[in-house]
Image (cartoon, rainbow, N blue to C red; front, side):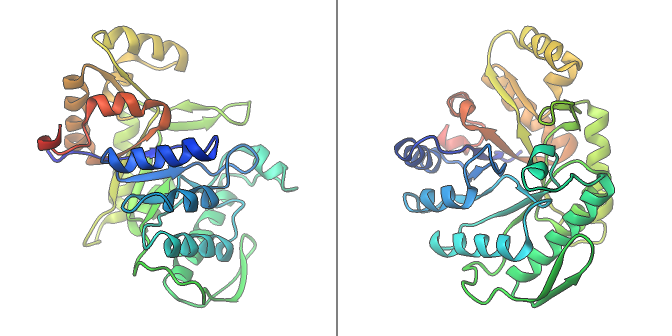
Length: 310
């Protein structure tokens, strides 16, 4: 087993603590600093990431994930290319189909149905990737319209900006298997009536199904996409079963699923490391994204560090 690749998702509260976090993430051996993209309730991701670029040298920088339902391809590609320029080639692109109704409402539009969100995602993703690759793009569809769009300046520093798909839609998991560099699984299911929270899909059967869809899409590719999981909670404890039962009660799922899934790291350091090894064996998951609130605990686990550095 190789050590997992771990990135940190966070957003700025103030300039000083944001710069300090960026430096800590880099010094701590994490791969990337990532920011959520929820207009109106989170910081502008590319502004925040450009600030982090100024105080770091090596870590990747990107949104996690940008909302294809409300982002326009040329503007998004320009943001990514500019971030790549100012970070000397460290930008990432990550896209999801979007789920929060308020984000459409605030822009004066209605959230499309699932099929409409899938079509919009594919149109935005394909146009944005083509623009970053230097192509001229014309799209004349109901979801996206561009007319001879071209990203002339600035151009990305990287020959290929790494692309992550984040989501769980059946069709998009197959699409991501064919097109993405990384497929990010969140364990989130149906959006609840509050428009923000979700049901969880943490069972082994759910993850088996999603991985199977990615593998179907990746059939015939020389290099299948890497598999990543968004870690919703981390707790280093000697009472993993007790903590898992408490979490399962809140999330209306099974405690056994909490302990077995890649979305929660719970247990002793040895138990958590053994769990990540099992996630790799069963599902091929070798990458994780953790939240800023859990960095202290992840540092304690040290699962992302080479053995010699632990």
